[in-house]
Length: 460
Ligand code: NDP
Image (cartoon, rainbow, N blue to C red):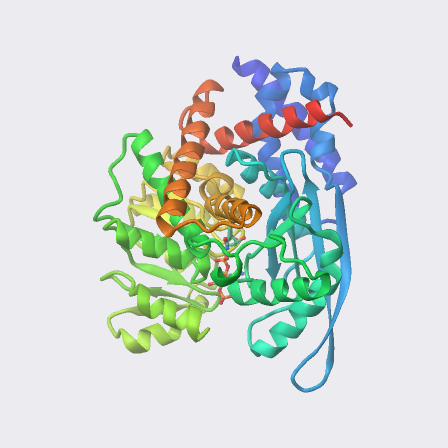
């Protein structure tokens, strides 16, 4: 598209966003941020194809189908009654049942869940699988709670949520603070209430219907995506390369595990209190023991490996993060939203980083993304790079519906092919729309076309 027309299109979109901000001004900034990124990417599509305006797709797509908000009362170990808020944002089911994780974290609010639900529609569309988008969770903090307290909270949460979910309606999964333990308790309560064994949650423990490889899927998927992106862009493979990873949860740990398997050297991980820098390469078995079995702080890692450096968050009071200040070939932000800022992006480029792949949802700020795109490094946005988790969730739904169980190798093979498919179609879309190498625009346009064409086909 000629530059003048493109500029006009972007101006129109920016005006639309300003109007949108005004009408949603009480909601959280991260939701605008997610919407703004998509709208700026799809500007050329909106101007070249009148049907999207005719069917008011943008106006309809930014409003969730419904937001369910409820009270969760539960009793702690001291016999005190506690009250939290639960949510489910059912955003869009054009392409299939609502699908997306549950987050349990004190920062959870409606704005954050709307941002995550909106992103999820696009991510799920990119997989090519029949799944719509949603997200949910609670401001409940599982950290420091006993297993019994977590169980009581989950039972109470499900007593309300079960009314709104179903294998063909809405199928939640895990996210921050919700792993196999929480999904197990939630599923147990669902069964007790309904007396059915429906595939109504994914990420279940394997012995009652969980798919093999679901825990690994997001992290492994990010690495499969990165391998393919480096191949398409004619860059060197990950073998033997220094990589930096943030986070020390499900996504981060399995990203690290797959990188090690491919011969790369991941040297960092982090949690909300600090960073571990282990120049010989992170000890993944120790990390799993600390984080999955003991739920301990990363500081413990330094007590076992004295060569590793523990850098507390307080070392960077002016902003910036230790993980992104270390020389690396490839970087993998896998903790949380907006964790990688412009300062961090500049540090990465200065230190010779050639690719950044987002394992977490929207971990890079818009300013950081601009730095990556301008410096022409390979940048894999979350909605494409971390779609492996939801893809394997869909495989779990398929296994549950067929009362079947697939092998680890079978699921891994399907995951790898799905990530390669997403990467190739994003790269091709970018070429088709004149933004070769820009995986942000490629992903947003490819996903938008699928969802919007579906919305037009089903009418209002
Ligand atoms: P976990 O709860 O397993 O781990 C989260 C990690 O990030 C922890 O190490 C946590 O540290 C750290 N973290 C969380 N919040 C902050 C913060 N504000 N500042 C610094 N560190 C923080 O979550 P997951 O690994 O499942 O999820 C990580 C990201 O990946 C999220 O953005 C999630 O939405 C996304 N994602 C997850 C998928 C999945 O399959 N699980 C699928 C697709 C995306 P601490 O323990 O100290 O809080």
